[in-house]
Each structure stands twice: as C-alpha cells, then as structure tokens.
Picture 1 (cartoon, rainbow, N blue to C red):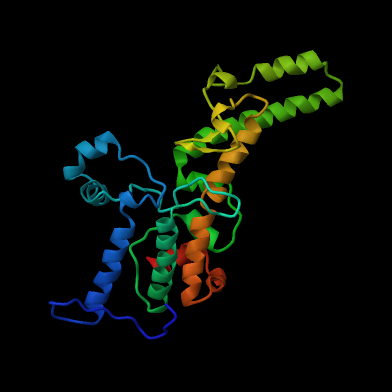
Picture 2: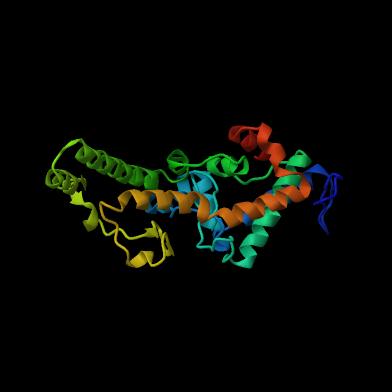
Length: 268
C-alpha cells in the first residue's frame, strides 16, 4: 500500500500482462467484497417477484441471486453492528476487510483504475466528514426513512401540543390532545415498537432496549436513536477501518476537494 509504483497483475498459467489482467483483478476482488456471506453491507431481501422473474429481469438482480451478492439497490453502506463506545466488539475479520478495502480503493484511485463497488451516497459523505441525517437514510433505505419520518412528524406534533400548555391551556386538555396522536389510527404504544434497531433486533438502542416499549412520550428519542445507530454508532468502526486503510496509500482528508458524486465517478 505504501509503494507509489503502478500496480500491475499477471496470472500464473495465463498469457498476458498489463492493463487487461490488472482490471480483471480489481473486478474480481470487488466481486468478492460484495458477497452476502461476509456480512459487511446493509442490504435488502431480494423481492419474491424479482426471484421469480430473474431469468428475464435486470442483470444486476440476476447476478445477486446467482452469485449470492448483497442486494443493495441504493448502494453499499456498512451493515450496522452493535459495538462498544471505543468501536470494539466487531468480528476481527470484518475490520480487516474494511481496512483492506480502503487500501484497495485508494490504490485503484491512485493508479487511475476503477473498482466495482457502488457505494451509497451516505458512505461518501462519511469519508468527507459531513453530517448525516434523515435525508441520508432516505437515500440508503427509503422504506425505513418513510416510516421513521411519519413517526418523527408525530413526535414534533406532540412537542408542539405540549408547548401550548405554557400559553395557558389546561393540562388535561393538552394530555387529551397528545393521547389522540396516532399512526394511521393506531396508538403509538400499540405499534409493537421497542428500543431495538428496525431489522436488527440484536442491536439495542439503549441498555435493555428489547424490553423497553416505545410510547408517545419516548417516540422522539426513539427516532433520533435509530438515526444515530444506523448512520453513526453502528458503523463507526467499519468507517474508521476503511479510512485507516485508505490513508495507508494517501491521506483520506485529501478527498475533501471532491463532492460525493465526484468520488463515485473517481471510484467507479
């Protein structure tokens, strides 16, 4: 990684060196890093209708099914994993692969090669040190962002109603209005939500989260914790490992002159 010489690859038993085999190397390694069995990436289940129609469907979906690659239509983003404050708690192999991936991508960029790793826009924003929020989640997981956005709107309405108490409204009237807040007619405490990350029941948002029910009074806290764990706390060790590997080739902060869209062009 620290060598500045142009990296070229040749294969034993095969004729040819130079650009062709080297590009094949980057493509093959990229393919391996996208395999679902590695548990590196946040992904969605391949829809049943996609599986049935794969024979005549999109080439990317066919490849995901046949090669068991992650199905990430919105781009690659680290799979959230429960980790301690110092970022530890992940499998050692996961951190090794993200460190290697950082070196791999940086070396490809330095040598003017391309990789077949379609990172999600929020991943690029992480590399650039930008603040992430609901809009980033919407790019990463539209379905989760839509549901969370509806819950966030209810939490904001609760805050607005509570603020009217200071304007002289009776406490009973305020409490009655708060109790009327529902999601499509269903009270919040009947949604079956607890303080675990949606889709990842093993990841608790707070200590003992699987036994803590989400209510109208804790809804705002729940929304913010989901965003925090999904975009930051659950992926910080993986992002740090990638940056560390990238900086083994050249300092990752040098990417700051590019936008996320430009990084996507440079990488892919």
